Length: 268
Length: 264
Ligand SMILES: Nc1ncnc2c1ncn2[C@@H]1O[C@H](COP(=O)(O)OP(=O)(O)O)[C@@H](O)[C@H]1O
Ligand SMILES: [Mg+2]
Image (cartoon, rainbow over all chains, first blue to last red; front, side, top):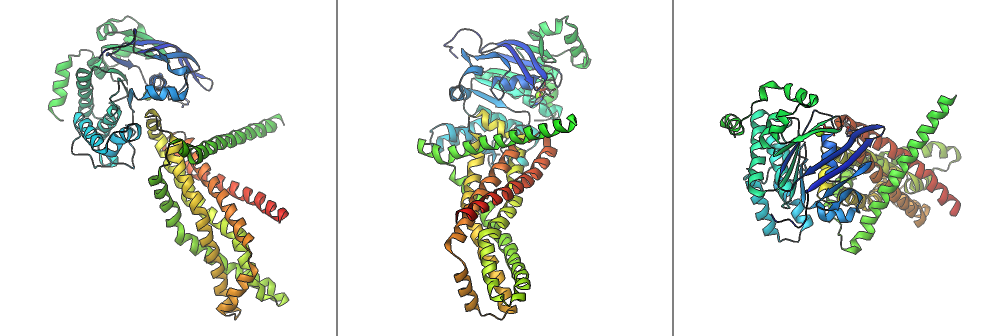
């Protein structure tokens, strides 16, 4: 992918957010490079979802800036962000499929509404995206008929519909059994290799973080406490990071390939 | 004492905030219904027709049945009073005028608030809780245009129609009582009704029904959008959609009836 700009794909500068009196994000600074997979790791309630919702402008900060390429998305009119928005796809924690529509209608909705493509083209593109996430044959199912993992895959197909440059995941494996969760991790790895998209994953699952990340950001109570490659994070001496890592000692040693193999053998 | 004052102040503020939220939603819905189509952003007619069937056509049986009963009851109560003056002939006029000016629009609005207002709040609230609203926004699709405008159009079209159905059913209900109990013929009933009603009775009722439809949609959708905290929140919003819209309907009814009274 050629870039027509210098610097990081996403740059968060001094982001501060309050919900009422409570400070949720406290001077968050973060650079995410084009083409890298950044995992934002932290316990629940630390403001990970809030941060990712700011990146796609579902919330506006109390103060601070977020730059996507060179555009300050927090301080631009809604209509101008609409043009950028189509370059960003998001998979929500609950998959957020439209329950009154079939899987195919869900995935094709952005194409139908936002492009002038022919119906037949849209059909083909929808099938390609569903194929990509391993859901071919499920076009006419309703979301309620799918399992949790399949819903996530369908949500991912919809997020991919507009061929985004940035893909955001909020807790992609939350609420899934380990085998299904590993399947989603494998899918993220596949996308990362195939498309060189900029991927941001919010999670509290350490195993999956170390597996898919190029770099990891550790958050605690609304603050970024460490940023680095998985090895750097593992070697970090920051007490909070150590505490977080040690709370699940059995997942310390991670060999990506072996981890995937053991989990995918029994299913998928 | 200061505690009481603080309580009143807080509640007044909350109420004003609620009204301003309703106002914002209404003005956006009006924009997407009446202005945006001329700028090439078409209305989602499929959705609107779907809502018309759900909110309008499917309500015809219950609206007719309840209005028919109310018509009979009005006839009974009217006769009970008018008998004393030997004026039972006027029961027909009483039923006709009360149904068209007042009870037709009001009964319809209360039924639709219970059926559709709660359904709007539940539908949008569930979508909010399951992040579907966020997903629409992330795609750049306007939530008012997608979710509110079809419902708003459906009720703007269907409330007057249902009100007419209710007027008719109520007058017929009164007629049944008059024919069987007061020994009138069907022809007498018809001509008495025709003499009693003027066009203005029907049109004021229909104007009211448009306002009631607006209230039901806006309150239902607003309650849906402001759902907090999961399934329990959806339940609460659904209930308050019905309570608040019935309150506002009756309040609007007082205002409009007064206006029609003093301007006639
Ligand atoms: N809409 C909201 N209003 C008020 N508080 C909120 C809202 N959304 C989240 N919070 C609070 O912000 C904090 C961070 O939430 P969140 O970003 O969802 O955390 P995480 O995704 O890391 O688990 C939580 O304590 C939560 O209670
Ligand atoms: Mg979260």
